[in-house]
Length: 491
Ligand code: ADP
Ligand code: ZN
Ligand code: MG
Image 1 (spheres, protein in one colour):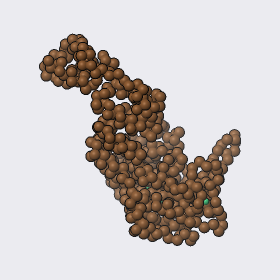
Image 2 (cartoon, rainbow, N blue to C red):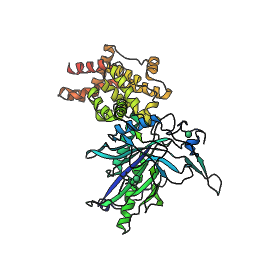
Image 3 (cartoon, rainbow, N blue to C red):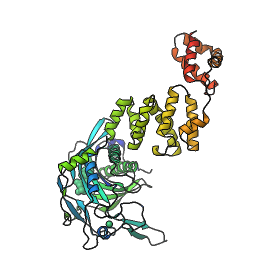
Image 4 (tube, protein in one colour):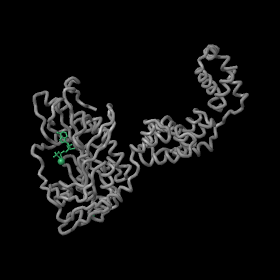
């Protein structure tokens, strides 16, 4: 990536970045926010539309209760205070994909405020404030294509008009691109756990605008911010922020002034471009939506919604560390998605050693998934399969080499572990005398190591176990082998 390294680290260190994120999330409701049209990605253009979402004169919006429920659930998961009475407002602006000429949003009385997300930083956990969470509707989509040699055409697809959104605005509490990345990762995790959105960035169900400014360290007043749009992955947001921070410092160091503007991220070039200057704040002429009554979320309703709250990722990680003796790192991987954590826990409950199940996932499964370019959910080996493999290893019925081979076959043939195990049933040498014969040979061939062992270096036993296992082509019963090696060396 062509991030221009223009500013020296010494100069960079003189400045402190200030970052605030605005995240739009589409809610996973069956129908749109104010009409009965299907809320579905990928339908043929302009097929999921009606007079309400097209903004035809006289059509009246009716609020989708499910959208309110999801928005409230997300607010509570983010520790926000939910307003009993919030107000919808019209945000007026012209754009070809906005036939109504306004978006229904919320302005000075949003659904929820004063929340937070805890994020890990190199100096421990840091709390990032959430200013507000409000409901609004999405606009349509303009599709620009440059097929013809000269003219570029723009098409308008209004299927997305009226899709229910929540916008989550952070406080300007974020200080580094890494913190921004962590904040987004945690936020997405929470939204996925509460199942209010699929958070699919490629399909635009999660979109992030990043506001960033820099100020000389020690100065209290914030610098002028730029807003970076059009960034479609968390990694790119981090890269865009890194670029933008450096650019702004360079401007200031050169005696210039950062202008308030919207900038677009270009992933191919690894830089941002000015899109439009925003010296004067936009005037959206907000006013209360006359066609909708105030939104009331009573304390009873709020409590009902709170009842649906699943165990959230952070709490779940802490519990799994305690329940299964996992490391933080294990717990992190295993709770990457709620479905995956559910599967792991189902397997761990019956497995002889949950710890071993976790280890297997970390050591054998994730590397193979990565190599095959698969997500956890696409793994040919199910959690049940991993649990069975862990049990067999725990009981010494499968050497680690055999286990690796079976995992390889499972990935090659896209079969689950139990299927592969049934068919391949790897041979095991459980005949003690046969194993002893091999041990004798290894002992005879390695007098130096024998001397070390007998001199008190007991860890050398592992060397002999390894050598014999190799000689047996991974087929010696591991439990028996361990026992016999020690007995032989001690005799
Ligand atoms: P605007 O009126 O331009 O929309 P807001 O005050 O509503 O600005 O803030 C939008 C986002 O920008 C919020 O996430 C906020 O935390 C962040 N923000 C505000 N001021 C700054 C600043 N000086 N530097 C960086 N981020 C900022
Ligand atoms: Zn509609
Ligand atoms: Mg604003």
